[in-house]
Length: 630
Image (cartoon, rainbow, N blue to C red; front, side, top):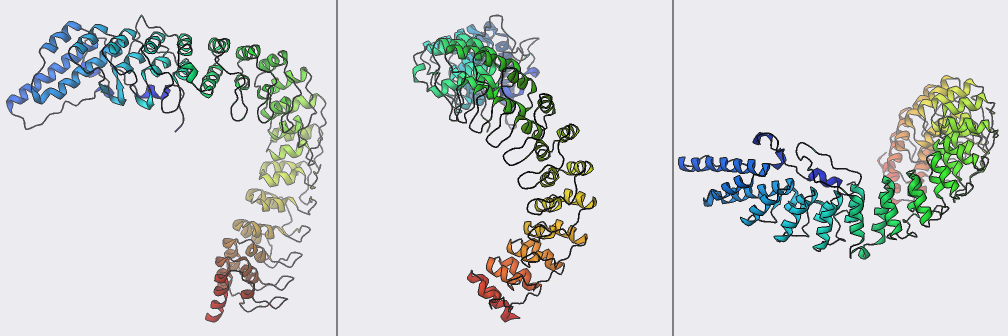
């Protein structure tokens, strides 16, 4: 379950009574407040039926009077309540519901009357609510005092483990908070998600009370979250709250941009400035991440180091999302050239996230655009890979080398292909990027597009002059790469453009060998349909079936056997696919070969039969028993 903030989830469970407007017709009652059914037994005598009808009318009258706060009418009805023993329970429930109405609407005199008449002060309603929870949630401090004077359970635990103090804090009911604390409310008690009333007061700040037809606002309603925070922080229990909880509440205030609460917590030294989360993330990082400039100023003024780092070495400037925030941090002394553990500066972060306005502010402050990360990436590489055209165009205007290479030899064009960045690819090539540039492995941008399955990129790069027979240092064509990664659409695109399906790499592998190794059955079938043969051999004499067997790709083996692959073909060591299967120990693969006619007695160059190479006893028995059965 997602952890809610403050008491937001509790609001969904808090029933609201219907409006007191109009004549109080019962048809307007909210269905979720109709907690008691009026159904009765159908076999009652005529006398009992008459009594039941009178009781129903009495309940409706009591409900109408309680919703209007009509003390005189309620008093009259209480004096005429049904004394029938069989109706005692429903009568009690009706009076408790009247108590609920008085707590929700703030009818103090009515509440006193009901309590004097013996109504249970801790009566529980749907969701484990009590009258005290309702009164605090609706900011009726006089009702709260009356309930407490009559012995209401101050520490009653309602839904989600909430207490009256949680509700008062969450609703900004400062006077209720004061009364509850004076009466001994336990500040450290948290509901089931572990949040304290302090957290609820700060987080509740974001949900102003909105009058509804079911609970109209009262003229004397006052909401003061800052005062709630002050009361809670001055209570005797604040010293018992773990700094983790205080910090959690503090960062919520920062996230929401409540400068008054942030300043108060800082000025009163409620917050430990040295506290960090487990990843080293602190309040200044949070304020920067949410672009809360006033909070940033307050934090730095209070003593936060503007260049403090998290566990990854990132400063607040690495988290900047707006140019205004970046300029503010720079004015406060942020180091624009600071690098994290991966060698990233704030410019790298801005380029990767597409924040060109932030990048401009950083560059204007003297941050270099040619700085490299530990992997040799510049801001140009990162903007190209993330398809951030505005950042890339800005960098090119600044004169950054368009063919600059990373530690692995990748140019920005390679990075654009890796990230499926069509607009950046077009921009780079229009600005003169070397289309045939190679990395340290001899890969072109076309190889990378094929590897990533970027079909449109393959088509575009081919149209811009890259050839289908471009080879890597290992002799692989783009088709080899696409097949190895299982990118079927790219394979079809390259073949349709004229790629040689029989091309071999330096190990003599065709695309079919790679498909068999990876277990791409559909790709194998497609390549065979393009003219590749099942007897194609690698430099080591292996057929595609040898390769599929060695990798344990049972489905691919079964498909190749079904397509009449030579099950007794031998490699340079004289081993058949069954020799390879016996050594590998995959019984399903061995059975597929045996069913396809594999020779159980075949000997390799060293005179070993398949059973002789089996490491697992079960495999040895399988091959030998199959031979005996034959």
